[in-house]
Amino acid sequence: MTKKETNKHPNWHMTAKERKWYYIGDTGRMFGMQVLSNFLTVFLMFQGINPASVATAVLIVKMIDALDDVVFGFIIDRFNPSKSKILSKFAGKGKYMPWYRTTFWTFPMATIFFFLMPRGMKESLKIVWLIVFYLIWDLTCTLSEVPMNSMVVTLTDIPEERNHILTVKGVITVIAAVGITIVWQFLISEVVGFSITSVAIVSSIIFLLMMAPMCTKVNEHNVELKNVVKESEEEKYSIKDMFKCVLTNKYIFIYFASTLISTILSTQLTLQVFTAFYIFHDSNMYSYIMLIGFIPGIVLSAMCGKFANKLGKRNLLLLIMGMGGTAMLIQHFLRGQSMMVFIILGGVCAIPNALSAVARTYIAPDTIEYTRYKTGKDCSGIFYALNSFISKATGGIAASLGLFILSLSGWKAVQVESFAELAKLGVVQNDQALNALWNCSYLLPAIGSFMSVVILLLYNLKDKDAELMAQCNSGTITREECESGLSRKY
Image 1 (cartoon, helix red, strand yellow):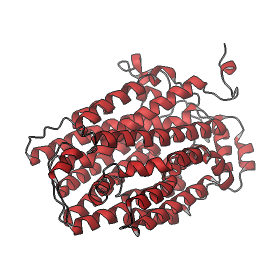
Image 2 (cartoon, one colour):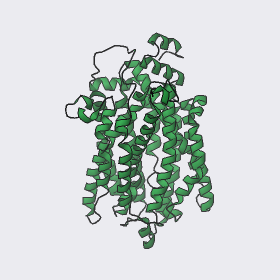
Image 3 (spheres, helix red, strand yellow):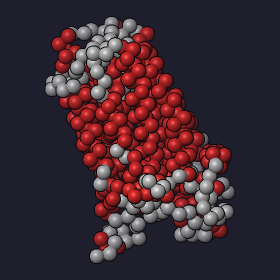
Image 4 (cartoon, helix red, strand yellow):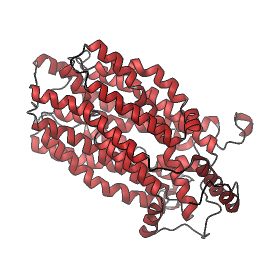
């Protein structure tokens, strides 16, 4: 049976089975990264380390890691493991899949080693452990994240197929993210009381097993560029060439700038479990909120592609970010209300966050096609390396900012295994610390969302123009046909 006979969309490049294994592998990769991201702050604070020390160490790691991301983006675009005598035996064919096959296993292993930090060590040695293994984890994440994200462009050149992949991938992300977050929080909560170390290690092994099949079951179908400005026998970029490609694309910088400011002020992501425990006296509180918004979030996320077609990708993201900022501002002023009122309202307000996970994935491929069209060079790796850098660096800054604010408020550091043990100890934080915790959970993130909206207003790459550029890059239409169809000269 031929590929087209087994595919509901005969003009699409990927088979249904390929897409299935891609979704499973990407979900495993994403959750594998989330293990450390979700548990980092709680794990370190349960180690009894002072919040200011944790914040400083995390900030140092992220600044060092910033260089790694940019360097490896360059390396991934310039070097292919399949051309190496040593790596070619298991790297396979493609542009980004060889990198994935070679490195996908490294960051789950780094995650496991990170959570094996001995509790009995001195605080200074724990800080050293944190810096060393967090750096290794960041490095290995980049080696998997950059080729996986860049692959969105090389899997197919058909806009309809690409949007379908991104939408399904986003919906799966929303469903699985809510599910795994609830499960994780329940397991480490005062109700069950498992240690973070055991949950993190078992989760890492499961996600590693999810990632493995993709190595042999997914192929890239849009590796070669067509209709470039200047043909060359072989793509060989210097660092100067790479940055010229990046500087050509003002749209990705606008997107990055909006992401940067919203992420830096997303101090709630690492602290909300403490908000639930110390203010609402139930560490599972945010799980209840996610459950209320779960079904509406899935339904609306599945319709994101239609919303994007009707409103435009940028306008959809603007609407979502504006709704999210408004929701957090309302929640900020509702402190002191009953827990039930807060859970219901919080569940409704959580829907924009679910939509954002899907809507953001639509922007990057368009901006990459724009640069491929303008320069004739495929710089996907450097773009996703910069995206990885901004995501991880600003996420680290957000975590550090929240922890610094807590340390200035007189936060009490405690060494425990789980929330069950913390509840037994009956630790109480002072009013100043609780006020700081609340502001970090709602006020600062709301400000970040509104500032992001203002920056995104500068993004004016038309969706239809990006589709024409993608067709030109793949050779479906000529460059002349593309230029005659564009809404304006770029």
